[in-house]
Length: 220
Image 1 (cartoon, one colour):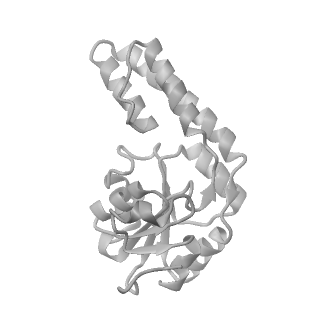
Image 2 (cartoon, rainbow, N blue to C red):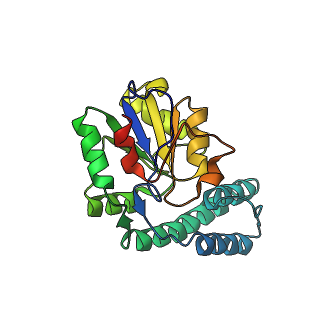
């Protein structure tokens, strides 16, 4: 399924989210956040409950930095270890969405530049990508950038490295934050319904909606 009445003929760059878009990685985010919050409590800091895991780590880190830089750095190292261990375990059991490898290969054959932009750690993404046999021009994980999605800087960094114009690029992802980031970056956006239902994207109005990433080949 795809829904779009515009023109994507001029698109020369596609940015993909990773987990939930190209592969299914069963990361236990609830457990990850629970461990991070428990670690924060050990350091005497409790972040807001409505934050994502990475934002929770940063919130605790900033609070600790106000009094002790060494303690703050120690916390961040421990928190990162907790997160990476969970991500790596999940990566080993990741499952590629059917046809995702062919999508990346076919886009390359058509001369379309591709990048993966993800909040996951580099080590886990590289491992899962190798298992899936993915071919792409650029990978930008949270380890490679100063700011991650939904901040558009994550996407703009990728476009700059690819020497691509946002107006000729499209962001493809399974989460509303992917669409929000893409719009803020001045890109076209595509939502894939591999994780969330269509209704979850109605308020943010992606330019196009696919059942999965293979739909991109029908419009570019």
